[in-house]
Image (cartoon, rainbow, N blue to C red; front, side, top):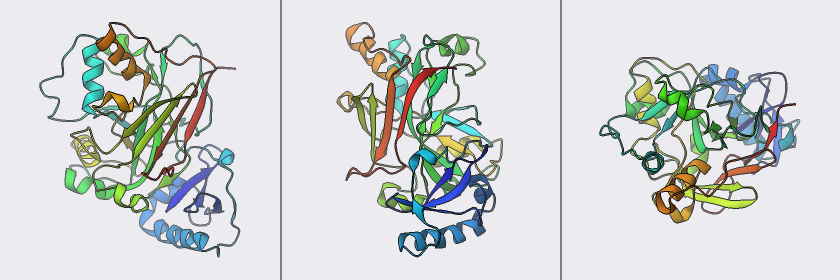
Length: 326
């Protein structure tokens, strides 16, 4: 099924969206918010599925035409946000551009950090920042949303706890990240609030694109109105969602509503483009000696849309303009 959150207060109001994303119906009588549904998923999902069926059969009372502009992020506030760097070509290129090789233990465990879990922007919210000289970049990702995940879960069992998938734009500030990492205490100011695609979908809604480990399909990206990448999301990483969840769950249980991503989608084939500007700049440095592509500036627009092989949008697009505060 497909779910979304209508703009209403801090956490939005839960709605069910039709398969063709043309119609919606209020679902707050089942669960007031997306988080409330995740907290009681075993019961809420049954009622939501029934409402989804009614909506698709044109029998849902109160159904209305969906206005994407009325949607906020599916989960404006999450209990935990975890993001990885699991696509090997992304890691290799960025390290090679600064003269580093891959760590010897790169295949031993996924690289994952804990990011800011509140303030997720809607699909069309402007990316507001205090200055245009921060090295502003987008990162195109697919994020999973979990239910409660027990401490010590195995990789094989971990994906059974995934309830939803969403599109993610993980905003990065390339000017601030290097000095932060040199201090050996991780990302902080270099990773501001990120944005989520408008529609959250259950794994079964993806059909064969979800193989129980990775989500396949084409990650399409545009920067300043030009096509920037058309990448296959189901290849290029030795670690799947189960591996990422199990890695973190070695020392902590997950609360329902945890968001976890595998990082910027990246393919070995350079001709398919890139899921962030930083990686393209890294390739330019490797191949040409210097970066040619500008990072985002005020007024620039970035668009991300993950599609199936027939060109159908799976989560709705993210389209944002970079803008100054105020």
